[in-house]
Length: 212
Image 1 (cartoon, rainbow, N blue to C red):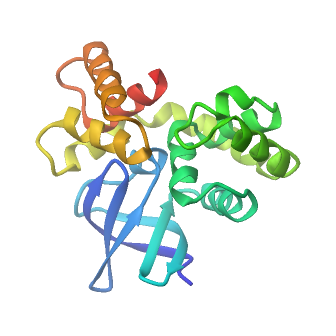
Image 2 (cartoon, one colour):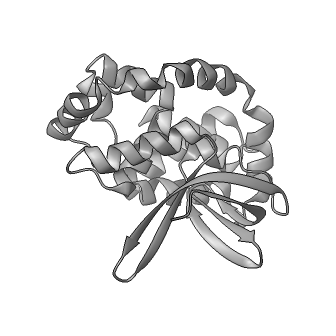
């Protein structure tokens, strides 16, 4: 089992990072909240890992904060009907503090806005995890403080993406998260109009997620 992975960033997109660790390139799926904190290509990154083994391969899911990894793991292991892709979409749509707050408050409507999370699944989230989110109370305070300092990291991430069009990358990331193509197009166009022509992929993606 891989618990922590650290090394040089070879590639970065809004939902994945390739890390060179001792000469081996590992592709790691990440939520937007982690992607915005990944340094540019050539930088060093440390991610807390949850690995999932299948008959035909292995998937790695990485997070900047240990608490985010542990919360992701708790979702996929404790809540029936939610797989890693949907759990990643949850942590991309809502920060950990907001997600814990929605579960604690039994805000089924807010939870159900994430692709793959219907009303019944949102209700299961609340039932299974409502008592457990108290264990993340310290994370709520820390993450809320860190959220105000993401600007420089967002610019660095945008500079490290490989595709030429930030808007195209943002749309592709939304589709990967489960949003329909037309809804993703509209949300990114709206974000681009609001942020301007110089907006990077991550800025567009976060703004689009907030409007869907």
